[in-house]
Image 1: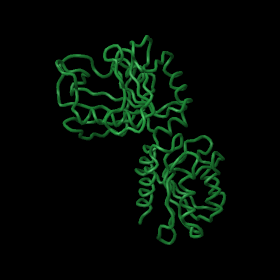
Image 2: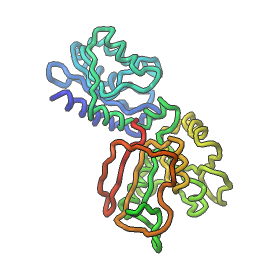
Image 3: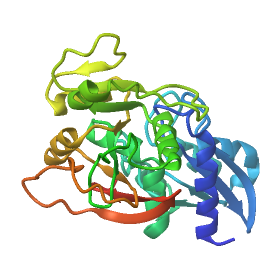
Image 4: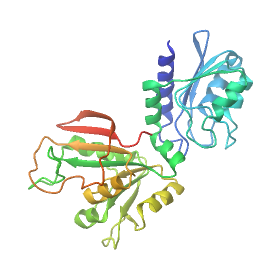
Length: 320
């Protein structure tokens, strides 16, 4: 197998830890010696062994002289477990190919430096594999490096950018609405603005998708909340509220509000990712999904996919 195929295998392994490693990232590792896989693993839970350690334990003495393929730079600090970089050196691993550097300030290049200092050959993947590794831990990367949640804004709109359709409750189709519930199930918090609260009094729960837990449900703006609302009101400046959420362990935030909330976050430079569900409909009238901004915003990595009868546009404002 090629280096690219082995790193892709490590990325697949990392996904097996999805949902159980918080606040840690998901990580996968594959050890290869003389063309044979001698050990592999993934980080299963916070406080448990890291992916590199699992792979080393499976390989045993066969780790000496092996190459490690890992999705994230081996850590160099003492946390609940010891530094993986030191364990790799002690095991005699000869080469490490990492998909991407660790954004955690406690490591952030120090793990690779420690390996190099011990005579280990170190390589970073670059290219599409690096991008895949960044996206795999996009929320963790922003949370640990910028001290705020990774913010995704989701909107359902017509082809002419309207967020309502006269005479219809829904803008997009059933498949798109189900995808939104899946998104809610995968984030730490979901939020709307007070305009949406007053208009719809939404629940913001993840329904009918087998969610193992519900996200925190938030409303940005000035209250009061309607009687019986189960949302949590955040009335301070956006930057301060995001910082507080991050300190409380919220790594990922999904915004579902209307144009006022979207414009506020976009103007403040606090949107990281856009998910725009576009229906094959011309609304003709009604509010658009985004208001006026002080300057143009360049989007990155734009791509489209079909969701039922709709088209989902995905783009990054800030690369993770």
